[in-house]
Structures are given as C-alpha cells and as structure tokens.
Length: 224
Length: 224
Image 1 (cartoon, rainbow over the protein chains, first blue to last red):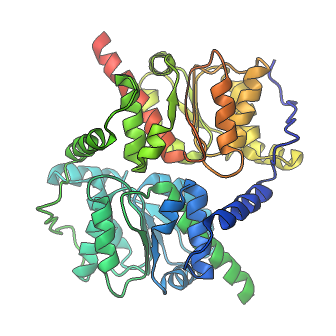
Image 2: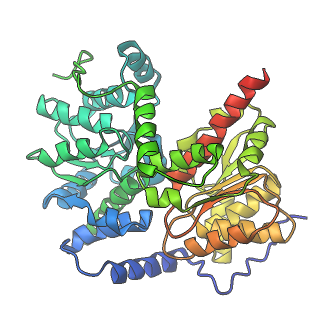
Image 3: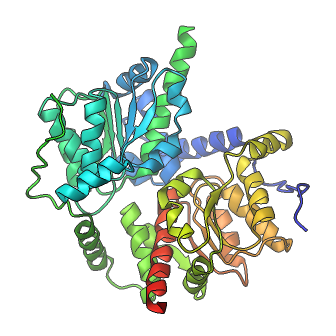
C-alpha cells in the first residue's frame, strides 16, 4: 500500500537539485567547445541549451550587446514582464519579479482579448500584445510561442506606441516564426535576445528570462 | 497614444489560427518524408514536431502500439492526468480533461511536497510523484521536465503501487534524462510515449498530451 515512507533509494542517482544543475552546466561547457558569446551572454545561452538539450539552438542565439544589462536594470527597477503565453508565466513564476517590485503578466487568456480577437478574426496573441502595450509601454516582453505576437509588438514599436526595455523573442514554428525573429533582429535601439530559425518555444524563453532574473538577483546582492 | 483601434494590417500574414495549424501541418508532412509511424501515431508525432520545429526529436519518438488507445480511453473514462511541472498544467489546460470527468493535477508546488523534499534532501519531483501515486494509482502521467520524477514513477510501478493507464515521459536534459527514458522503454505492460536521447521538455509533452486529448474528443463525437 502506498504511504509516506517510500524509500528514495537512488544511491547512484544525483538527487540534489543544485548538484544536478552544476553537473549539467559542466557537461554543457565541455560539449559546447569554442563560441563567441561573452561571459554574461553564455550564462543565458547555457540555460537555453540546458532547457532544450540542443546545441544547434544554443548556437543560433543572438543577443544585442546591451540586452543583458537592460534586462537586469529593468527587473531591479521593478519594470513589468509580459509573456505571450501562460506556460511562460507559470514556468518562470511571478515571485522572482515581485520581489523587485515588478510582476509577470500574461493577457492571452483574458475574456476581453478572446472576444476582440473573435470579432476581428485575428489571433488572441495579437490582441493580447495590444492590451499589454496599453498597460506597459516599457518592460520586458517575453514571447516564446506566437510569431503573430512578436510581429505585432514590432509593429507597435515602429508606430511609436511601445518601447520595451528588452524583448526576449523566441517563438517556435513553421509559419512566420523564423520571419518574425528576422524582423526583430532588424530593429534598432531595442535590446533583444532571439535566435535564427524555426526553433524556440516557451521553455527556452523561460530559460533566458530566468537567466536574466538570476543575474539581477546577483546584482541586487552586490549593491547591498 | 495607444488605443483599442490599432490596425491589424498584416495582409500577407496568416492570422486565422486554424489556417496557421493546417499550413504548419502540411509543411511538416512534406518535410518529414518517409516514416514508419501509424496514422494515429503520426498525429502525436506531428504535434511534437510542430511544438519543437525539430524533426530529429520527432524521429526519436517511441510509442507503444497500445498507447494512443489507452490514452483516449483513460480520458473518456474521466481518469486523472498528472503533470510533473506546472508548465504542462498551464500549457495543456484543465478544461480539456474536466469536460470528460477527469482533471489535470500537478503537485510539485504543494507546500507539503517542498517540506518533505527538504527534509529528505531529495527533489520535489520525486516527492510529488509519491504524492500523485497515493492519490491516483492509474491515470495518465505526463512528465516533461524532471528525470527524477520519471525514475521515481518507474520505481513505484515496479513496487506495485502505481499502474498508470499511460505514461508520456519526455524529460529533457543532461543528467539522467536519456537514462530515465531508456528505463521507461524497458517497462512491460505499461503503455507509453517517450523518445530516445536528451531532448524533450514541457512543450513537447504538452503537444503529445493535447494530441491524445483531441483524439479523445473525436472519439467522443463518434460515440454520440
């Protein structure tokens, strides 16, 4: 009969979460070999590889020179973080931003967003970005699923109604995903983290967001 | 100034969500070429490729001959679905199971789980599987993140305290992920969906779970 006294008899298996991370990172460092990412960029890319077990995806990452610093500063200044899908919200968690005064929002499941998308015959992702920008002209935009969300955000930036502190734009897929990231990489004056090609997704977007948030925590400790 | 009347002027961009799916699937069908998956298995694998843009990952998928039917029947019989991480719970959504009488649970963030994991110096993933099995001997177990969760579930099956209707086991990573899936593939008498190697993750686990749930919906319509 099942009870609370199961033996967790995995002697040969590492079950210490910190050790699992350290061991994973040492494997990734070793297998990655040569690369041209800076030390801080590698902290982001390594977590992307950790979340995907995909070195090809890791090597396809593009990070503007100002992106990591912009992300750290945004979090420490309590700027808000906007995710395109709820998987990112639950995967990253709101607590890591709330402790610095900001929060992590996702509007795609809001009833007014669905209603408007239905009325206009468009995606909820597009309408949710419009709602997000009305609430947060700046902040960190983390888009890991919907190319239409990223394209809409880029359009709103070009129209002058959005000015994110940082965009993490890594939507995945076969229709417009690679193209949306090409458009992002053409933007000037907006710090971004993205990647080349079809691959991406919520888990790697969470990995990048969490990497930035951990760097912000380190910075907060240094300041104290 | 931002307002509700943004033009969504993406004339060349497909923004009809159903059309985006259809178009994506036709690209995947074409680029995949020859494979040995059955028609129903392909419906699962195609969604995994759709969520990852990764044909290599798609080709690494293993599905037992009874897995899809077992999953459909479990959902239609209102059996519960257990996810190892909250990203799977939010990505798949509880509604799709509640309408058939079941529900989608995730115990990893429960305070009793954290407390016990801390006390025993082990992972929350392991303790959350023990809690899940005490509540649900059967049901669908969807594990996309933690190898230790999958290994613990396999141990509980071997001890005779767990007997899932279906395991979707696709944890990702560098420490024990591939090994945990090898162990799953050795199990006899338990239907499973898994893959070979380090790749996997919450998004592809959600894709497989949603594919099964959509097949269950189709079956429910046929029965009516």
